[in-house]
Length: 93
Image (cartoon, rainbow, N blue to C red; front, side, top):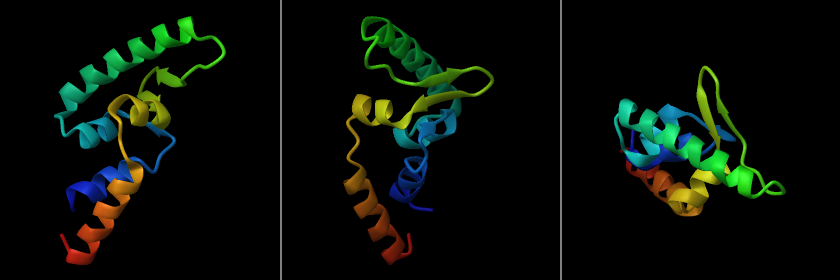
């Protein structure tokens, strides 16, 4: 499967997990898990400072972060990823 197609599929969810972050950031699972923990801490701090504009997350059994936070944090262009994924499908990559 193509690299952009995997990223596009990861961005189809409202909440992204460690596996999705691993695909998006092209990291091993363990590195993505550590990054996820850092991001959750960042969200907690943000939510304390901004009670009227909170990001949602889950740090129970499975870590999950709002897709919007990930897009904003890493400056992803969803339309570009979609375009590249479509090209990969057309080329059969």
